[in-house]
Image (cartoon, rainbow, N blue to C red):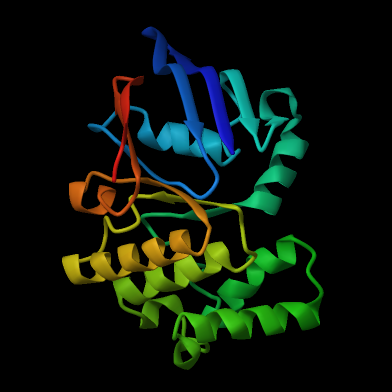
Length: 225
């Protein structure tokens, strides 16, 4: 699904050129559950942002399902993101003034799904995640674990091929975090490709591949049983 060849990213400042990623060569197969790990400042979130086509300022080659992302315009990359990628953030990023149901409707409206179809998809997703009773509540009325559950449901409502998650349990207590990871494991078993950034070795064990970064360099990628 993903093939990176000599991918690099740097930024320029008063101190000169600073490298965030250096010579990243990486392959992620469809159906994998991969984890990106490393100390703070290693480039984990930067790499995830590039994979999701949110960051366009990088060098090297990036193939997604055989398509050369590095040759695409910003508009084409945005279309690829809409069509194929779901993203789960550490800070939830729910819209405070929208109900749970309305938060789920937003990504479908971006994809120009008909209103009648959107209503059915929202209803199905709320039912699948067991949050029908929360549909008219606002994010501030939910616990942290409930907010992240809503965020995960929103990320996959349009059935993306790739789910990216940046520290998805970072703001949750341990029991809530384990529930989110069980959900990720189930989604992966159903065929969804998942790439998560985490500091948690316990969370990393849920997947089958660990990619370790340090100072922008990829140290190794370990396959897990």
